[in-house]
Length: 491
Image 1 (tube, helix red, strand yellow):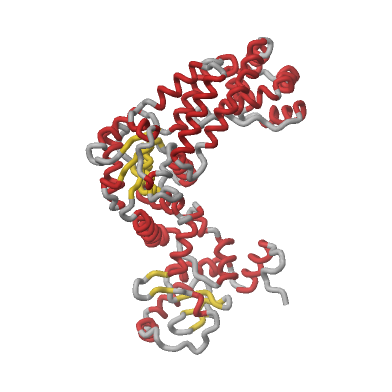
Image 2 (cartoon, rainbow, N blue to C red; image 1 turned 60 degrees about the horizontal axis):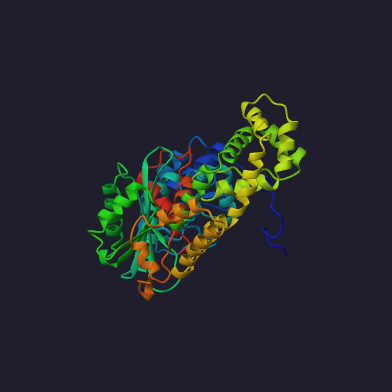
């Protein structure tokens, strides 16, 4: 005989079937859910409200009197005695052993703890538990009481965070480590500083997010204080920090320079992917017509479903990606697209006749032969964007990363692009510690030291996923807890 889950489930039928099976009005059902969420001694079993210590069902109740009836019952001497003496054997154990898996000694509902951990790891807001359809579905299929969002936020989120925090702390231990430090602004324009920590023991490892801090500013002192605070919180020995990775922002450069007085063995390397992005900026500045074309075409296509439909009909190709100047290599990648499909895009620009300032400027631009020459000339930089992607690969050795940089230098010399070569070298020479790695001055345990800050950049992407426009009331403490669990849950 097939199980209920063996067939395709019609969600609406499941929900309606559950309501019909209870044979109660909606208001009564909501109050039953509320009672179960607020008092672990009650559950919904066999579609009826039940007091588990007393093994008593409440069948003959209505929505007006359900709370008063339950209140009278909970104050009775029988109920109080049964709650205290939970060792009494139940006459019927059908499904009751799985209804509430509770650690009595610590007062923790393990199922609720699991719900909190899963929601935080998946980035699901606790408020989703207010969805009546979800609550009904889970009651029907897993026979478990569901907590209120506030209960998870106040009582369980911190427990999940502390459990994972202790796990990360144990994994880091007394090993040599590296830090990745960066700062950005969140949706409320607050300064956010994320600090990653990776173990250096000669094997392939991924870094952990160890702190999300909200400093008052972005000065060098703020960055230094954030590093010290994060290491103190995780119990990291200052002498075990042998490398710090940042971008080339002045605050980061100044902050790490000051932090070296505390972290005596720490070397500082700026991200090689950021150095390559600086080269991309130089290329963009040297090709102004191509840059204007990319900008105006983006303006033309943004927030216009009609023009996007016309583009597909006329060009019969996929829509171009939207370039983000600060996102590594995306401007060049869009230019490759325009160079490959230049004739079709020009056909589209000529064919449409909307009243749009950007469109008028594009029609003027495509009449200039220099634009096509610039776009086609940009194709020779394909090796640069390929390298930017390659340096983001996990668990590269120092030699593999340095070889990518050296190959870039050789290729820029081959195409005789002295501007790009000079920009790359000046970016790499922002600090002298990079030379130590070029000269192979590092221990065997440091062989997998990263040379890019890709992981801390990814942590900011995760932050944007959590702190949406609908969740701006989250406190910094809860943001740190949610982000820590979301980013580190794969341990």
